[in-house]
Length: 549
Ligand code: GLC
Image 1 (tube, rainbow, N blue to C red):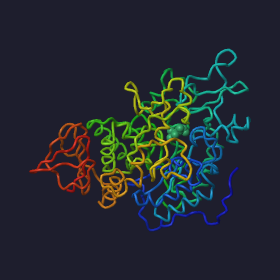
Image 2 (cartoon, protein in one colour):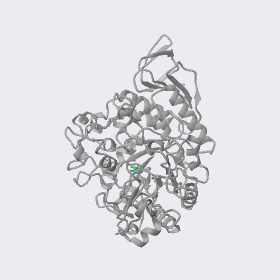
Image 3 (cartoon, protein in one colour):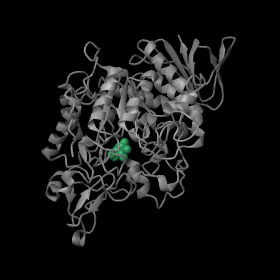
Image 4 (tube, helix red, strand yellow):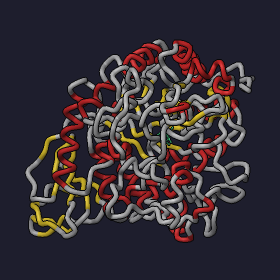
């Protein structure tokens, strides 16, 4: 199944030598959800050639690196996070040559490329799982409980709902923390580690600059697979160590991967998608001999409240500083409700972005957020493909994917079946769907209102969200030390955050009304223009302003 790479000249990073190490410490990394970014062949599904054609746009936007979500051979039971062959490109997305050419073209533009690696589970169509003998060695099989073994081996629940176990025809059970089509690997078996070392080398040899490690907190399970004894396990994820999440044993795997990454030239990185119960436990993933970065989900899940935001910012900075790592910041991704919708509207979305881009460290952007795209909340059930939705459709049949008041909007946001709403293909140009996404249609319908949000519609309009992102990213580059330097809090009225960074001061007003403060300097950039008069300024409600100091 693995395709041959016919090129004798694998894409090598063009301009690595001579660069300062640690590019990732303050990098802005743009997530390309491949199937929804740009389609080259008209099948309505984004692909690697389409993504390559849009690289100049990303260069012009001002990002440093691109993270590509899984494009590997897969039955697509979970948007490609069910991998059947880790060394092959799924024909939906192109060929291995397309992947190599993507990496080469990105490097030619000075952009880095990181790719997803999915080590907690494979597809149930992976050759290992299809061979019953191999499967029992390399996945987590257990006999059932009760008379005849008809009950699951323990009480663990799948993140997507229902039991985390499925019974085979032979009568035993296999573990799947996600969909039944995603059996968990048994990392106690050295064959598993050896195979992933080889897969990492395969992509590093092809020239990638690193990996986003899917479910980096899940590979090791507590000995004996003990019961949890709690009904609503999804609510516990990220709030405590579980027998299947954030076990200490995962760190040995990340340490060995760090050694592997360091054995390559250039500055290749590992980024953990880890849900840990505290910033301190998250920081363990980025100790000097482990991974380079970990996604900061506590920031993503923080509420729109000055005190809450300050607390999470302080805790994140302190925890990562304790291990010498940079902090990362993220507001949106392919698993959560897009942040303008989640936070309560586009005005807050723009302010949150300026806050994030003013913080020290590295920031992750999710495709389309630079256009201010809202979550699509009215997708008909028939078009939805998220396995979390398909597994819970008995309780989600309204097509309404906005969190209800009694729900935690960030509860892995959307693992209850709402993730299609942030995965709608993005609008590039034109008045009608698919808005330049490709020569055919788009695999999920795009709202009519998106014609006003396309790249073409916003380019050159100084009031647009796209130009706000461009200006913010350009300032990040121009102000020395803004990326990875210090942060000093400045006294501010309740509901307002103010902090100084090298060359600028950032003020955020989380209240719904204007707040008067002394003018801190000349405005550099604003999500909503402030009015200043007689030494005072009206800091706009739900607004963020950067000031020159
Ligand atoms: C990660 C991915 C998500 C996927 C899950 C299982 O959380 O971001 O999209 O469904 O892992 O692989």
